[in-house]
Image (cartoon, rainbow, N blue to C red; front, side):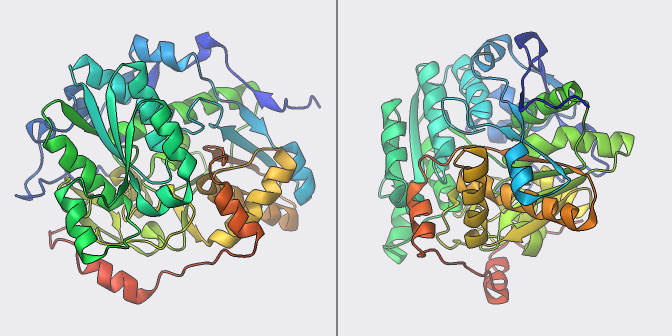
Length: 456
């Protein structure tokens, strides 16, 4: 039998020319976003102060495929495709009959999958005449990607980075500033939201919900500024579908197809970008593939949260969204996977999880880093802590195949490298990392903050 190559690529002509929008195929459509003040369904005019009209149209689109602008295709061609990698050495180390593949998104200038949506978001904003974009970032991957994209289009960029990650990853600040963006730890003294939170808790670790509130306030108080989000929203997940679309073509080249698809889950773009083009096959063609969104046990919105309407940010300035949530006031423990510390989840992913089409699993960070170290030793790539959540579950599934003798094909998203996460690895290797448990008391307190909106 011919051996599958270690890495499989595509030619430039084979790169996707359209994004995939799973909203076209979902058996149950998502409920509408609501205005944070009136709780009435939002329309394009409500979102226009924050986003360019092209993105608003994508947010509300039900078309199955959406054209990628030629200008964006040209940028993609400089950094894509990302390779589909067969993890032969990891398979051997585990002694599994399973075939393990991963899509490595850490090869582009930002080092993660986030540039896939940063480029089109910057492009559409520039086309509408916007000069400045404000955003949040958890671990820094999104802030890095948007700073790069804004530099491509000669736009200013303001980044509010969650305080705990800002302190853990100081060189993210340097990288973001190198591309001309400004960066502040959140909560900051630059916004009303930040000042109010610091007054209550001067030592606040911050959260993505808080950082989103600050970035939205920034955009709302500057006429030349729009807001950009790196996950959660429909248009972001549409852009990230390029990962799964490429992967399907690459699997065709090696004459294989995944039995299990795995991605880490913060706001949803990482898992969804990889999985949704394959979820299409499950919904439309009945393909029997298992999908697992992996989240931290310290922030388990799918596995422990409530599917209801909740604010997308802490201050209640962003639209009210139908999602699995732990409560918009929830500030997760300071785990090292900062990109997964979000209280809620994508409306698209939440609906698919509620419908039983995709599954979820929560894991602790010490076992995540144990898996990350083994992966680094076998595959010679140091994974981001977020990506290592997917690695852990992929390894668990491979070991299950070892016990059962099943030769399944396991596929996960290695969404970025961990070169800026060495302090996290230092804590793990030094025995100074601890696990955090999300308790029923925390859930009760978090859910009490959610708006009382009928959910039918």
